[in-house]
Each structure stands twice: as C-alpha cells, then as structure tokens.
Image 1: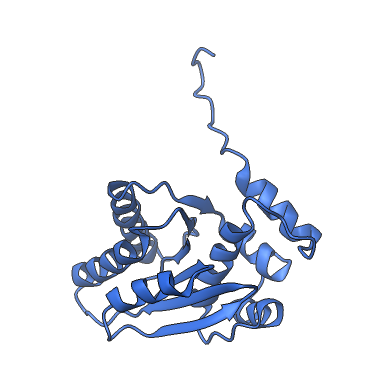
Image 2: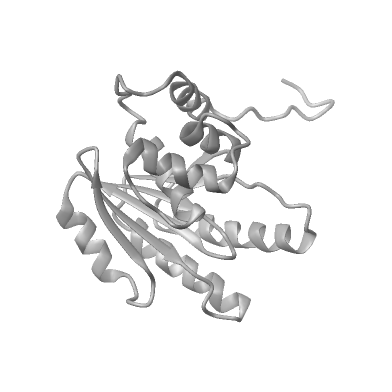
Length: 200
C-alpha cells in the first residue's frame, strides 16, 4: 500500500492506495468513527481518504490524534510520502506545524518507516502543472485527472502524494511531461550544503 500525508493544523489529510480492497478495509476499521472517511476506486487502485479535523481544542491532544491516526495507517505501509514544510509568514503557525511535523516524522521512524519528502511546489506541479497553483485548483485537478471528488485541499494534497508513490517504480505512458519531471526531481537525493572551511 501507499500512504500520502498532508499535515495541517486545520485538518490533516491522509490518503491510502492499494490494489487490494481488503487491505483498505482493514485500515478503515481501525480508524476512529468520528473521523470522516472517503472510499473510491481509481486507476485499478482502491482509495481511502481520511480527514483528521482539529476536534480537540488542546494543541497537545490535537497533535496526539494526528500522530495516532498516522500510526494506524502506516503500520503496514511499504511506501510513505509526506509533504515537506512550507513555512507561513505567521511565526506561531510555522512553529506549531514544525513541531507537529517533527512528532509525526519521529513516530514514523519508530514504526520503521522512512517517508519520502515532497516539496509543496513539486506536489502542486505534479497535480496541476504549476508549482504555485491555488488550493481550489488542486481540488479541481484531482477530480479532472483521477475522477476523485474531494471537498478538502488537504485530502487532495494527500491524494497527490499517494499518486506520486504509485508511479514511483513505473511511469505509465499517460503521465504528462511535468509529472515525469516531478518524479525525477523527488527521486534525487537532497544536496547537503558544505560547511565553510570543512574538508571534503
């Protein structure tokens, strides 16, 4: 299976894709009933979308709900993709999303997962062809390209991440040039800046 994670303080989106419906149903039964779920088939894959809305008002309870739900989805995944950081000009939000990101990434490591990071601009480009596409455009493009009707841009982003994971090893002929370009970019290992004065 493939798991796409779009972390957000207002509603974290999770997307699971699997060729087997039984695997999707197994995960679905684990999820707390209060969390909205979407099930659909697309391109020969079964899709499960989960929106973790911020019901707890306490920030720590909210983080814990997101961490636990990600863990329920990621336990048996072979490929996990997560959207990279896009820091807001609002300092408090940037700090909170960075803290949440650290909690979730550490929990994934505890589960033996090494998530693939996808930059926000790369994700938008993969879905809509432009790295600066608006949120409503992302939702529309997911429906246009894959026939999945989602009301939340967080769910749409998570779905896009899962599709990148689906195409990771095999690039179908129907992929666009910009989607192939994004795949090639994401697969490249990140460059580590050399510290000034450090020996090679």
